[in-house]
Image 1 (cartoon, rainbow, N blue to C red):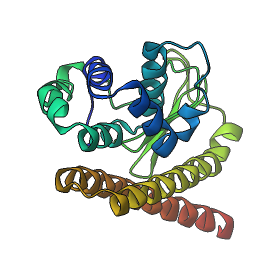
Image 2: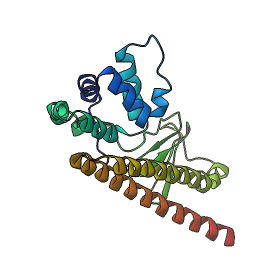
Image 3: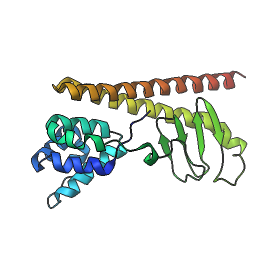
Image 4: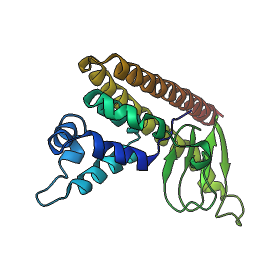
Length: 213
């Protein structure tokens, strides 16, 4: 299960634990896309928000928290009890039928795409419109395996890159507690990548059977 973080607490931790120079160094060393967005005239709060937004969108909140812990363990301990979001605040794991944009939902292995949202989990494909429409047409349904295959392949590549980044961090950190956090996150990503590989294999097998038939 993917760990969900309290973004407000994480924002407060960044502000309290890192000096301006430390924030800049952290972004430069570990979150270069964020550092590239830093510009003259920005406030400290704006830079904190850029870092937090990137961590949320790229699902690297655990990594960010671990890096802050390595820099300022004392401050981290003050916020540790607030960092994890309660289950009641967690976003739903399953896609809604009225999704009008393309998104990949991790953890549950579900993929939602387009105004006529479609979801795949465990190799089963369910199609639907905006909640009040009938099933997709036959021509669209025939494209589902290829679309799902492309989505899972992209997911596999993304997970591989994130695992490689964690391996670099593990090689650099000397703090034992940080290593534990990074190893746990790496194991989660490895399991997600294995699931993606299984989905890819199942879809490719279905495509081969379809072509052979």
